[in-house]
View 1 (cartoon, rainbow, N blue to C red):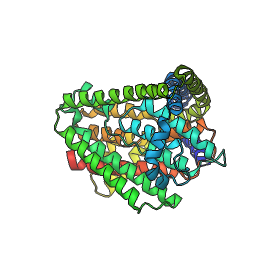
View 2 (cartoon, rainbow, N blue to C red):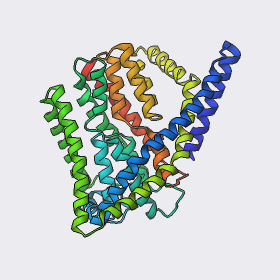
View 3 (tube, rainbow, N blue to C red):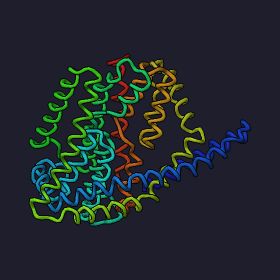
View 4 (cartoon, rainbow, N blue to C red):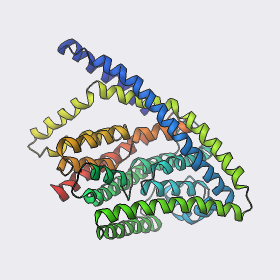
Length: 410
């Protein structure tokens, strides 16, 4: 229901602003630009879905082998103590906990192409447990918030963009992004737990979160000892080795269990194709609304208003120029990436604005895109508190990114 109101608001606000521009300022280009955006955005939505087809077929095929080979069940048993606290409505030892873990791990390594199909598989398994098939369950919402909070250990693509656009130290945003995304994820877990009345003050979760903090600190220290070129090589190699290890491990587990791994892969791949087709309408709906909102100039007006408000209070407004990336990120990953690159080319790759844009890009994820794809894949219509929790996690990431950027580069 919330997504419905937001979708309507995008169109209504865009239309009103465009009408004002036409009547009072004689801007005859705004409506053609908005109509062009509807066609280009719908085309983009289809191309995204088409591009996901092969990846979904691959990873859902691999997941099917893992299921038949017992790997997912092993992961589920190992993670059961933690997930029974964080996802109390999921039965202990259920295979979905293995799928959730693999999705979160892929996101942490920045492996978006692998994370999406793993996440869709987890959503399908949670839908099987869902008693109200058109309404998001508590585990679905917690899982979605973990995705939208954007916990990423190795922001490879952002560092590559900085290197291509001439940054003196492309990796100097690595630690700030890691810190900001950690706060975003932590805030998302806390807010969702409050909504769902989950008790976080128990021994298992406290030890897990404390251990996660220790691991992150160790990773930060390890990478801080490397130069930029070595860091990129090591992080890329680790990501690729882990991916290939998962594929080979699943296949060997299937062979050990005497599973026909080829047939299992084909069965899972067929599910990937149907999933990719099923999400097309949801992607078209959300991307067209975002495209119209941008083309009307509503985003520019919002930024100008924020800048005026910040300056009126006498505060430093240097961060405002980077806000388009932050505000676009929940709506569109490619749009936010474009805003980030625009900041690099306009202000310079080593400017405060550019660095903050990069931290924004890495500290949160595309909330509405994930909502459309994940909930759309299982035909969820009523999202309950998912949007509120996801956006609050994004807000925490934005605030943390601004504070951390001033701390490191201000």
